[in-house]
Amino acid sequence: MKIQDIQAIQSLLATPKKIAIIPHRNPDGDAMGSTLGLYHFLRKNNHEATVISPNEFPDFLAWLPGTETVQIFEKDKENCTKILAEADIVFTLDFNAFHRVGEMEKVLEVLETTYIMIDHHQKPDDYAAYMYSETSIGSTCEMIYNFISFLDQKDQIDKTIGTCIYTGILTDSGSFRFPNTTGNTHRIVAELIDLGVANTEIPNLLFDNSSYNRLQLLGKALQNLKVLPEHKTSYITLTQEELNTFNYVKGDTEGIVNYGLSIKGIQFTAIFIENKDEKIIKISFRSQGGFDVNEFARAHFNGGGHRNAAGGKSEVAMEETINKFENLVKNLTL
Ligand code: 5GP
Ligand code: MN
Image (tube, rainbow, N blue to C red):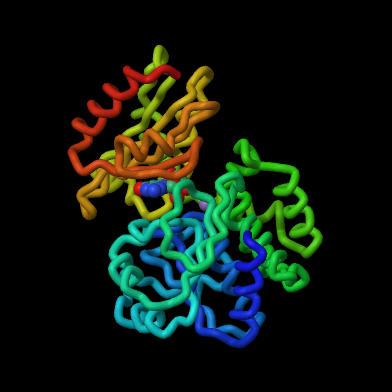
């Protein structure tokens, strides 16, 4: 971050402020971990902070400290709009373009406030007065740790803040496996463990909390896995009907996409999940090595993300979406 920006933020935060903190829609571990980590830090510094999530967060994150205070925009637009209107500062975390918050976009677009963006996605929009945007860092949570350090308040990081930060570092790094996991990542984690963060229990809470239905759905997804070996590509589909069969709840499909990369020789994979309510097919892309799925998602599926993990959507039916995908893949050199 620029030194002038850090100083400006330090003086902004020198007196108690009303602050809203926003993750992207369909928040994941990094989005919830970073917003709640920052929330606890700001509260500790006497600010009136509120996390406003565009929509519900998944159940597997409900144990994070502070989730009971999170306001859900799509459930209580009136109250959330009021909090936003009164906010001196609005932090947007783990996203960098207003369209990532769904309906809430309309409110954010016209808000007269001081926006601070902390994010690790490519190509940030320029709505923020202060921006800490760094695509080489594996998680927004790691950036929250850095941000608090830049403010010269690292000593404020306690077990509660650390628990939130650790969660996003863990989930966004694929449990420390993705390429942007660095020595710094591990040094931060080491410090968090020294603060008492339950580093071996948290993976348990996050990943060993499945329902029977979720595992059955995973079984269905793996049956649906299709491999295009000559293109080093695989993909999974899940229709709304299949989701309904296994009483799908939010979060149940988290992580399933990664199975597509676990086949020997596969470098590119995707999962296509039908959402009849939103009339879209939500897509996640993952790659191993040089293939840039962020570019692919941007160019063909109205999305974006990172080089090895991105998402997008399709507004045509599953079959048509898959045809489009297969045709694109046949022209790729992986
Ligand atoms: P996931 O596939 O786990 O939902 O997302 C992978 C990465 O891509 C995350 O960093 C996420 O924020 C980003 N991403 C997912 N969907 C979209 C999308 O529709 N648009 C953009 N710009 N990024 C997305
Ligand atoms: Mn993230």
